[in-house]
Length: 200
Image (tube, rainbow, N blue to C red):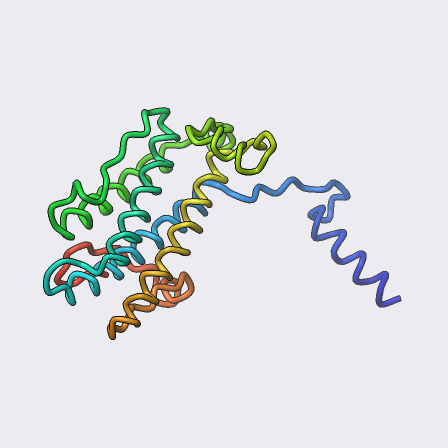
């Protein structure tokens, strides 16, 4: 009896009690925008520590990962827009603050693009410039990826490399900021402040 009761409960939840299974979207513009807003805040908080503690050139690993984070964010934005994949190298930035400013501008453009994206835009499959490289790596044709799914990739990719920067800062004797998504929620989803003297 209990097993049947549980089964009925989940059947009603999946169908909204109507007997018809509802179609759930994994990603929508509002949810993705929230994740990107958190990502911007987290990047800014990390940059605050990096810039506050810098007494000259940045550590090579920290520089590499921060550039990579912002480069990939920009790369996906260019793919969404259908623009050529032309991106600056790390050596193109004269100072760490220049790289930070470029990252800040990229976050703004990501959020602006997503705020104007329609449902059709979000579910549009993308053609990636690195398709052939990945097909060679996986030895098979690539399945389709939508704009919404690629936005989630931007979020996850940034989170992964942000953790590498934090780990490296600890190795260098610095205390990285707590930038977990749930920490951002607990703090009331604060707006990002990119001023190096007081970010977030």
